[in-house]
Length: 470
Image 1 (cartoon, rainbow, N blue to C red):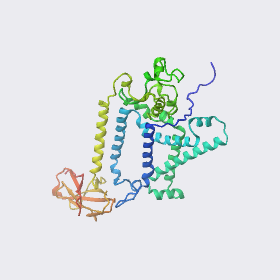
Image 2: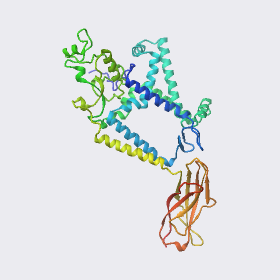
Image 3: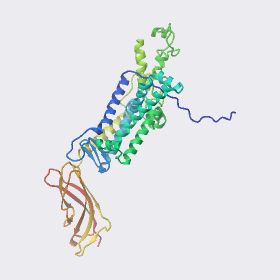
Image 4: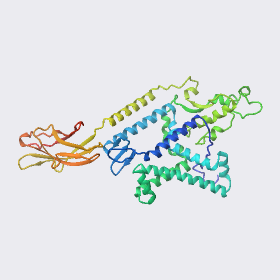
C-alpha cells in the first residue's frame, strides 16, 4: 500500500472548441447578436417623457423608480417582479419539458459570453490545433504575446459588460463621464469591477465548469425530462451497425460497403467531440454536461454532406423515438399544465400593468395614541396618508371620508393637494366624530381621493376608525 494521498478532485483538462458552420451555429449567432444589442444599446436609447429622465431603461434607486419605456415601476409594484419571476420559471419548465436544455444552449448568459470569449480566443490564437500547440509549447515571445492579447481583449469585453450593467442605474452619458473622470460614487466603481471580474473568470477561465458544477439547473432539470422530451442524441443503431463505427478505408467508402461489413455510418472523425463547448462525446448518450447547443449536430451534418450521405446521425430526438416509437408526443399533461400556468401568469401581469391606477393612496392609522378624546367630547383618530402621482402631469386631489356619517375630516392646510408629475407626498389627517354618533363599535371607513379637472376616477383606501367602548 503506497503512502501517496489520492487526488480528491480531477484536474481540469483544457477544452478548445473547434469552429463549425451550420443552421444551429447560425441561430446561436443570431440570438447572441440580439441579446448583445439589447444589453449594450438599451442604456443609450433615449425616450422622451413629460416628466422624468429621457433614458429608455433606467433603474433609479435614489428616486425609487424603474423606468421601462412608457412604464414607471414604483416600490409598491414589487409584486410585478414576483410575476416576472414566476413567468420566467414556468417558461423554463415549459421549454425544458418540450426541448430539454435549449435555454442553456442558446439563451443563458454564461453560454452567450463564453461564445464571445471563445471567438476572441480563436481570433487571436487560431483554430483548435493551433491553440492546442500554443498551450503545449514552452513560454516564448509568441506565446506571451498571443495569450497576453487574448486576456487583454477578454478584460475589455468584461469591462464593457460591467460598465454597461452599471449605467442602467444612472443617466448613461453622465455616468460614463463621471466614471472616467473619477467623479462617480463608489458603488458604481464597485459594481463595475465586480461584474468585470465575474465575467472574466466565468467566461474566460471557468467556462464549462460553470455549467457542469456550479449551475443548479443542470442538477434538477432531469425532473422535467420524460420519454418525449427532445434531446440531442446519437443514432446508435445507424452509427454503430453490427460491428461498430469505423474510419474510412479503401473498402468502406460507401454506405453499401460499410453495411456489408457490418459497420455503421459513423466514420469516427471526432468532429462532434471537437466542437462541443463542454468537451463531451455525444455518442456516449445523454450526459449532464450536455447543454443542447446542437453544435455537434452541425458538425455531423457537415461530414455527412461531404460524404454525400443522409443527415441525422446526430440530431434532436427523444427517448420514445430511440426506443422505436414513431414520434415524440408534444401534447402531454405536464407540458399543458406548464403552458396553462404560464399563459395565466402572463395574462394577470399584463392586466395588472395595463389596469394600474394613475395615482395611488395609502392610509395607515396612527396608533400612538390610538384615539384622543377632545374637550367637547368628540373622538379623534389620526392617520398618515401617502399619495403618489404616477402620471407625467400635475394632479390636484381633494379628500373625503365615506362610511362614517357625521365625521369631520381635517387635513390641516392640505384640503386640496396639488402633486407635480411623479411626486409623492405624506400627509397627516384627523377624523373627528361627535359624541352622539358613538355606538361603542369601531367602524371600517374609506378615504377617497378625487382628482379635479380630469377624467380620472377617484381612488379609495380602507382603514378603521376606532371608537372606545362606553
